[in-house]
Amino acid sequence: MTVNNPQGIHLRPAYLIAELAGKYESVVNLDKSGSSVDGKSVLEIIGLAAGNGTELKIHANGPDANDAVEAIVQLFEQGFPGEEAAKAENGRV
Image (cartoon, rainbow, N blue to C red; front, side, top):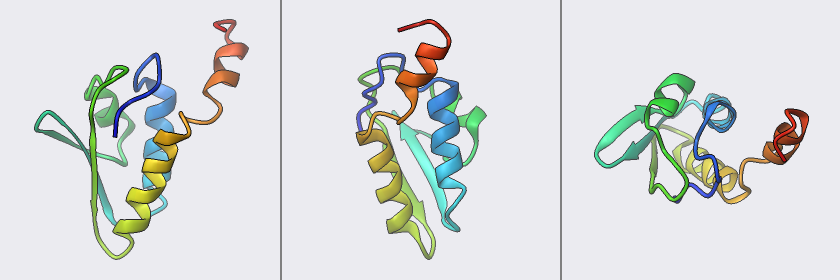
């Protein structure tokens, strides 16, 4: 997946990814340039320092792995819903 959020993966998108991954039994990982992190950990996701345009690989292992990957891909494709509303609340639109 390509990060398509102008601010990259900051706290809110990292939380959304980790929250969604946490709904699945499978182990979910995000990879950036050979570094792999736990997709259920907000801090590890932020640690990737994935800016706009960064290529990430998403993979999972477990009984619902395909569903987990598909859901996270969809989250990326939707551009992290609520991101614009959060910026407006903070006066950053």
